[in-house]
Length: 442
Picture 1: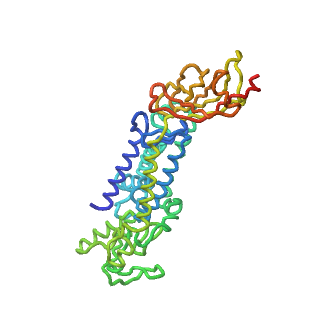
Picture 2: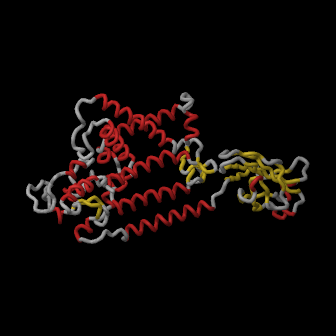
Picture 3: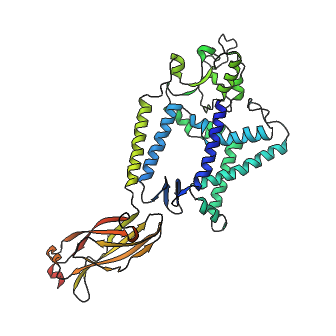
């Protein structure tokens, strides 16, 4: 199977997964959803409140180290095999402009300009791609606004104008990148291309021409040599097929996206001569020293270990994830004596946050037999993702054994829980209860 066919299959799978993934839910939770509207992150079908920022730390570590690892191992393999810009260009140029509307004669020669005339075909190709861009922009939004909310929002454009504005901006950016900037986007706009060269070494797998077998095609000044004694017959098939409009025989270049179209073209020509391809997916050291590619080396092993540690850390933290958050603040008044002068009272502001996916009835208890809850007297309902503040008044008998504290704060534990799932959804927080000294009671 050619590299081109493998890339096209990969593109189809990536497109299919990206379109389907936002619709898949388990217990009402998405695989990935960063919702600014609901102020929560859903990851691996788990919900994290915005106050739980630790998943973002692990995500960023895995993301950046993953980029370093992939680039060190396979160069710009992301650019040629998974980048949305590359997929958009293939859909627009290869599928619509070439295969369907015939604006290019063949995908074997991408250096020719689009056929003159054929304005109807050009307009139709652009309109069809514009429709695709609208869907792609909506699909991108679904990772920030879930589809079940998105289709409700677009029914009320006046109330959700921001959604339409962002949707329009994403659509325009996709159209501009794929239809107008084209491959220049990869060279001049994308920041990844600027840093990828610092991550690559002579063992990084790249698209490489073999000058030992094929002969030198360019001199040190990048001027083409007229006569060549190597196996390369200078058919320029590798140049014609290149979507980045470069000659890979001049060496690795910034514009190369590792698509390996040139390797397919060279293999097709060299097969007729019963010779192996002069362009392969290999490393500079493997070509120069005639040895196998070293996939396992210090840099790739180090990245793998750190990524594995970050992933284990994320999984471990996920097992300790709570389904509720409780913050306790004391009232400005340290204590007070009840109106009947029979008890000492302390007031607290309890902030409950239900970060579970469904609503629960909540209440709390004080893990001290001498302290009672005066208010609230009944459990209270909190919806999923909702925050509720309750003023709690704790009291103890005026002749309680706590009077031995003589004005010193007594550490207490307040245990909040969901009535319907007390064993799993609970949290314990420390607080302080003030029992005044004898002089203040008088």
